[in-house]
Each structure stands twice: as C-alpha cells, then as structure tokens.
Length: 277
Image (cartoon, rainbow, N blue to C red; front, side):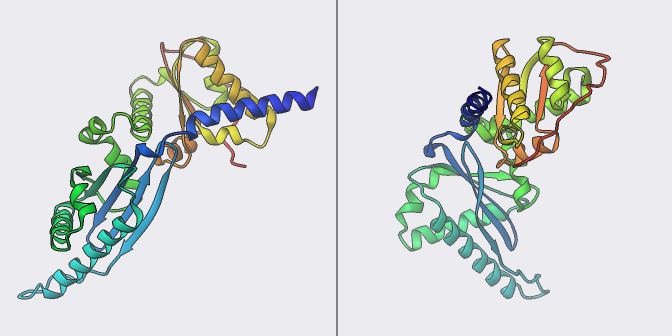
C-alpha cells in the first residue's frame, strides 16, 4: 500500500506540474535585447525562457574627425543580429518580437533591419514587420527580460502571456512584502499555516518543488496547492526556466499574498526550502 500511495502522489505532482509546463507553441514570443556590440535573442514560451543566440561584436569608439570604423563595426553587428533572428525565429508560430535596448540602439537596428529587408526583397521580414515591438531596457543582458515584461506597453500587448502574468504576480508580492508584511508570507511552513487559516488569496509556487527528491515533501506541496484552490485561492505555478521563476526559487520557491493580515505568527518548526533533483 505504501508503494501505491507513492505512485498516486507522483501522479498528482505530475498533474500539478503539467499546469505549468503545457502551452501552445503559438503563444511564443521572441525578445531581443541590445547594447552596442551585444545582443541576446531569447524565445519566451508559456513554459520557459530559452536563449537562442548571443551576438557579440567589438565596437571601436568614435574617433575625433572619423567615425568610419565605428559605423562599419555597428553595421556588422546589426547584420549578425538580423541573421540570428532569421535563423532562430519561426515567424509562423511567434506572435511578436520585442526589441529592447538603452538609448537609440533598438531604433537604429530596426531601421537597418527594414532597409535590408527591402534591399534584398526579404518577404519574411517585410510581412512580419508588425510583429516587432520596440521597448526600453537598461541593458542588452538576459536579466533585463523582467524589466521588459514589466513595461506597461508590453503587458497590454501580451496580456495572455504566462511569463508577463508571473512577473506581475511576483511584483505584487514584493509590494505587499514592503508595505504590508503581515499579508506576504514565503517558505513552505509559513504558507501552510496561512492556508490553514484560510488566508491565502494568491499563492506563487515554483514547478521545481514538484520534483523534490523526498516523496513526503513533494506530497506537502501538492496538498498545499489543493488546499489553497479548495478554499477559493488562486495558485500561480512559476516555471523555474523563466527569470521570475528563478527569483521565486531564491525566495524558497513558495510564497503567498494573504486576504487579511496575520500578525505574530510563531516561527514554524519545519520550513522546507526548494531543492532541485
């Protein structure tokens, strides 16, 4: 009977995990972040964030009286980024391409992209021109994905994207933690106590927790999810392959925004943290 129980719990954990990992390919987005000489082409799907290409080109500084070397290097850089996009993006399934950068790098790149598309009669780029969205980011590094997905212009365009919803939920938790800490709990044992008090309004949980090595711990997470849902709470399962999921994992992997404050909660004896396989 013990083995049967273990199999049932594994099956339940698999069902919970599926909610995080499934999603149609058609909901994919591509995000390209640039600074002069550095670009990351990232595919954002409902289940994960994948770095598809990294382009690095040395850009010499502008010299007084001559910008020739600088401009030639920039052109090589833009050409390499354009080729990476053409090589790694399937526009039949990608809904939009976010192009983010500080300053005017993104504008200059898009201008180059469209000019080359016309010059070479590239129908793929010309037909998919409306899919490109320019947004501001503080850098060309991958970590700026969270910043881009938090942009109000982007969230309004990508309201159905799971990644954007995860970012908003995590931001709401951090705001609550800052302004009303008695309504923001994290850590398994603390969130369990809040759930027992029927206080959980929204729970954030990383999918990595459903792959915990210990069956008993995995079972606790599954039962916690069921408990919150049964009592009318919302459960957001974060992909550990998204930037927001990585942040949540650093915060124990499970957190909750409460309906009402719970003050003077005694410290639980057992507060399991998130462990990978």
